[in-house]
Length: 250
Image (cartoon, rainbow, N blue to C red; front, side, top):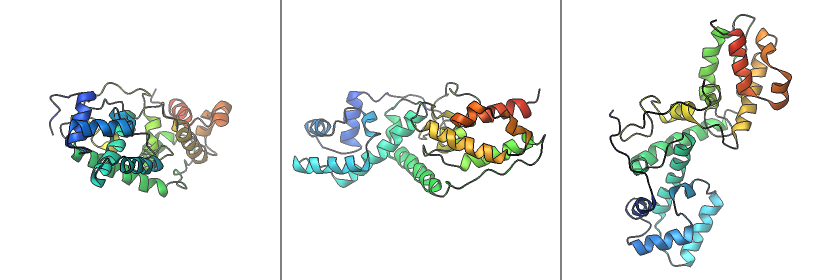
């Protein structure tokens, strides 16, 4: 797969063109402008915070104003909302190339898969650590488990245990793909690049803490968990402390 050669940031003119030619909310610029004025979607970033009830309300307002937006167009906009969330989660700008229908479908299917996985993950536990001096061998299996545990944020909870809170600059997404050569998949892109400033990050961190606290009970690794970590349920901090104190190669 080839790297992207060029990217075009989706500014106002590009966004209007996308609404007309890809989402097809109108066949003329005037119709697109009417849609933007009624919906408030002045840029693609406005899509991502829409709740189900807000989509329903928008469809009713469009009908009341005799603005005929086909149902398939609304579906495309909903897919675009998920895609915008993904790109912003991973710190990527929204570009014309990123909003191709095939990429919206790829991202949407991945998020649906993660959503389905989340439904059965609430009672999942990490494999217990058995004995002392065993943490270094336990970590790889635990990391693999955390890759498949979906937290309250709706993404794999293992993003919290990567080495760098702020990931290094990405080489960019591959041509016709929603992930980089380094990432290799949409899910792995979330794990390696998800930002730490999301409102649900603290809930993910609590979930991670509870998983580690239960798995480490009765072992020396549990000594790495401080009263402050217990009080605030700091999962990432507990993982890093255990790693540094009982699994360091130094």
